Amino acid sequence: MSVDAATVRRIAHLARIAVGDDEVPHLQGELNAMLAFVEQLSEVNVEGVEPMTSVTPMEMKKRQDVVNDGEIADDIVANAPATEGHFFLVPKVVE
Amino acid sequence: MTDLTSLTLAEARKGLAAKTFTSLELTDAHLSAMEAARVLNAFVMETPDQARAMAREADAEIAKGDAGPLAGIPLGIKDLFATKGVRTTACSKILGNFVPTYESTITSQLWRDGAVMLGKLNNDEFAMGSSNETSCFGPVGNPWRRDGSNTTLVPGGSSGGSASAVAALLCMGATATDTGGSIRQPAAFTATVGIKPTYGRCSRWGVVAFASSLDQAGPIARSVRDAAILLRSMAGHDPKDTTSVDIAVPDYEASIGKSVKGMKIGIPKEYRLDGMPAEIEKLWSEGAAWLRSAGAELVEVSLPHTKYALPAYYIVAPAEASSNLARYDGVRYGLREQGRNIIEMYENTRAEGFGAEVKRRVMIGTYVLSAGYYDAYYLRAQKVRTLIKKDFEDCFAKGVDAILTPATPSAAFGIGEKGGADPVEMYLNDIFTVTVNMAGLPGIAVPAGKDAQGLPLGLQLIGRPFDEGTLFSLGEVIEQAAGRFTPVRWW
View 1 (cartoon, each protein chain N blue to C red):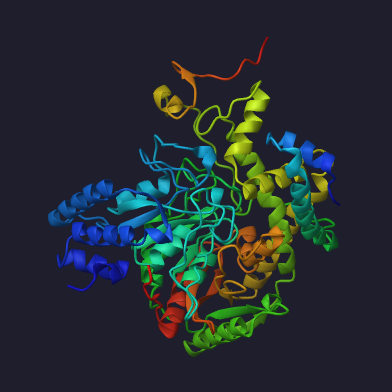
View 2 (cartoon, chains in turn purple, yellow):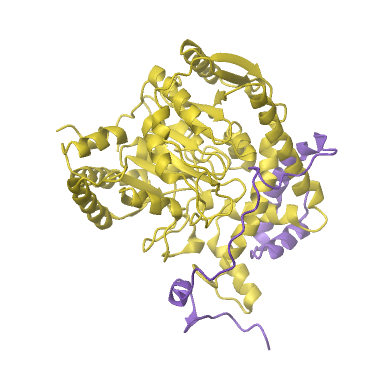
């Protein structure tokens, strides 16, 4: 399988990465090189094989449903590019 | 007094305990070495004031007689580990001036045990790379150069700063992370020892995530014993990481010098690649011979799905990365680029903040997870991963204690030499190491010799889950036979 220029633009939008028209051809080439490389997996017979979900055989650990952290709003917003009080500021999303 | 930077961690520990020198002296010696080696670009942030304060504290504890196992030992920390109050960037522009308000579990355990932080080490952006050339702080120089050449070579990656700093004697050991070979490949390129422990052995909490089902932290060190000492402090159960395993941490150092007599060592025939350099082939047989003369039994084994590990990795790792890196959106931390609306703000931030390799991987990951392609790519790759793991399980079920392979298909190469036209050329560096991440196993790279141009080469030992101890015993045999390698200082 390979991707065309329109698909490259669609993937970029899905990944939320702005891509200029001048970048599309080389991205298309690189993505197709990677897709060509992984193509060899189609040779493998995976009939009846379970997909891996956990590399170490262990049961999912569960935590007690209790509050064990918090009251650190200052820390949470400390690195944000734009804040007001304890809120993150973003461009207007609702008209 | 001998140059304090030339000691191993184990030797320094002895000297500190005997009060032959202080941690402040040891730390100052390394801080000077670090300053004199800025041309290597191994450190992206130097923290000399913090280092001296920590050293004084360690000296006080040593004087009181209640020093921790790493008391006063100066270390470098890969910039992927969150360090409270000290900028942490994963060497990406998108994290900007991110200053964590918390400490990663691994580094907090190192400080608990008395270690001293010298600074933060360079790495490939988000640990995506095999040469440390994708860092937003620029490439790292390998302290090793070809005989008679002035060309600067890469130290490998992604833990290139860690490997370079340890090899150049700028720190006594370093933290590193390994998703497809990022500890073992740079260790092999710089004649240092690097171990990727079993998945779940070390907590991932506070380590910038790349591909969560593959990421595992470990040390890069000057000797096998030093690696064992460091891993003991780094490992352990952490309730904050649900994949961290609740198994007691053994005294890895006790494995050093343990007899390997009667151990069964597998030599996987699938690792004998067409066109493999004769030097690598020779190194591999030499390693086998050393283990045999130490009493181990060498057997040929088969890992039939080996060739599919790298292609499966280049589906699984980017898929997980595309999901993990979705958090960099210009809202909660790091860089923000303005846009006419919120979507444009996300897109412009990520276009400006991510480098080329990261964009490529996020995009391929997005593609293989997108509607209509998930089954063909991601699901198939996860099935292949089950088969890769089964290959190893079958091998261990036949009584094999560990597997011996080359660590890399070549020695270090020059900056800008690889991957310019085709990204896959760079990916092939990890051909011997990536299988281990796919199966969640422990793997150690130990320096074993040099190529015809005088560059170091390493061997890899792969162990059973949670059997790092055996890797240290076997690694020590190789180290004793091969000797230690130190680069000639040119910086």
